[in-house]
Length: 485
Image (tube, rainbow, N blue to C red; front, side):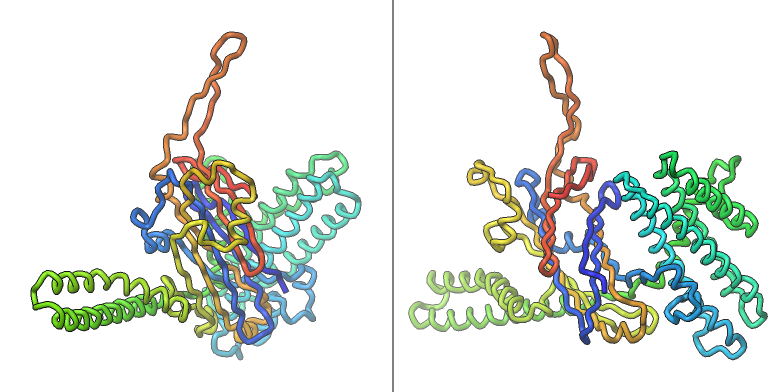
């Protein structure tokens, strides 16, 4: 089973992407929790008045999907391996004419799964060999590994492309034939792009043999797509060729990955609970006011100064009571008093598979746990006590998944992947112009130093028992880089 994992990257100039991998346990349900802390310098003026909790939630996009199954390619082409999407497609084709209800959907799902599996296997293999090459550790063992993978890929492609003749059966409709073509084109693109990356990494003279074989594989895929009249082709005289290729690759990737994304529906429970708390607070405040008025009348006449003072105080107490009740209910019933609640559905079975909840809070470093404070302020700063404290946005997320039910419906499923994207436009508004000119003296002459004004926002992620610490380096234009702390 996969381990709990998280990674952070720049998705665009003004968007962060956090990817979380949740392994599915062997119990009936899997419960996981994540705490996310953003520490903002005081001069950025990040506060709840300027950026509300709803604004923080609305700046986030959350996608939950099944993780790509990790099955070696030599197992995919093993006719005795029942979990192979290729074997399952061939088995389904053996029953053409006597197919069960949902035949088309099942075949398309297996084609999409095959694309996702192949993409993951090629990516992981290329990344592994690339790391070894950068370490100048491409020994004879790794050369043999590359040669073996090339042979496996050729065997896989030949076996997979034999499906085209089987899909010409008159009982198979045109939608399935088109799905096969999309899967075939997608697999060809993955092959070409992956081995171009590896080809560019192999620069030593000793690598000439595998470079020649990779070049042959890439060129054969280009010729194959030409013969199949696929859209992903380089056309020298077409000025928009690059746009067409990029769009085609993106569309095919989204098509194949659509089989993994869980359907989600935002729950109205947080709003309903909020209205209930507000009503309870209003009723409690009114009760307090009535009791206070009765007591005031016993010691002072109606409409007197004391009576009016008591009524005003009771009205002021209303908001305080509301916040106090929200805090109390939040501690007693954290699953109900969340700011955000998403119900997750199994895309294949159309049944409820779990839920996730999120809550945003503005706080200060002194109110955080000792573990978080120690990690954030690991480096000593003698000025910390005399400068204003950081503003902290704390986003707490919990997810509960019916893991036993999901594994029963999806035998290859080992983990879920959640992608959270943060739009950071609101963080940049108070930043100064990034360009700044500095000077130094060099042999009696003033020399310019090109400088860029940047801001550092510390980001801590606590995922179960793991704690990650990143520094987001930003300027007014967006994300400059992300540093591991």
